[in-house]
Length: 292
Image (cartoon, rainbow, N blue to C red; front, side, top):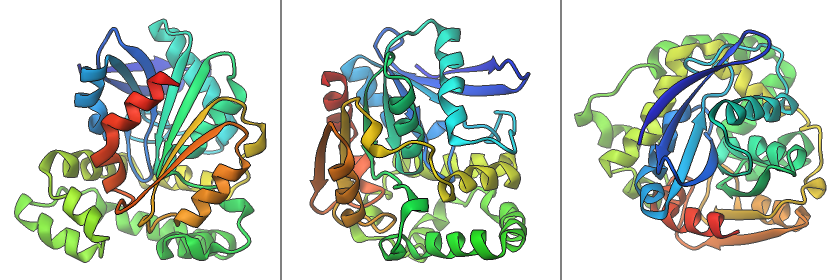
């Protein structure tokens, strides 16, 4: 099942979402990464159908067909999800976040305890505003954080300059070259040689940039700001999955997050990186989440 829909918020803004998996299955809200969009949930489609899971994957505000909300905060997200779930008639649900989707899943768990039964965090972003030492972050993220704090207008101009290139669809014959240029971990590069996985990851990124540079930029700003709640306040069960070879967020940062969560079952996977973990372990991740 792949179903597209739009929900109108009380403000008049629209939120776009797609559905994957089993239409009658256990509902799971999917929180896409950054820069990315709702079609990243293609990674879940086949295992979700096998396991009887219904994936609801929204585009965040400003991404693709979802209306831009320039001054939005992370705390606004649970109200958006409530509107989407009410629109399709779902009460309780579980959450699944990959990479940059993690703060959004944590926000749902912290502020929707009556509806969010459990969340799974896969290669998840950490509270960057709380970091005293950023060496565990991908160098690109460290650079962006520094520019956000010191020269935000320059960062905005760089986003606008990057958009025409990053919105292009690379020819299939150039994919091996692209993977080499990204200097990925061998496990990540190998997993992305699968055509379906490559499409789910990179087409979802292209779709985000194709919408607007402003939307991608607004989405990025959320990570540099305080979340508005503490990890220690999250009482819902958290399934935390992290690859020991993750370059975006080091495993040491993930271990610190796991120690702070009151109800956390953490798995740190050998020979898994930022991309290969959700690509190669999605069935296991979903099966564990719906059993929580």
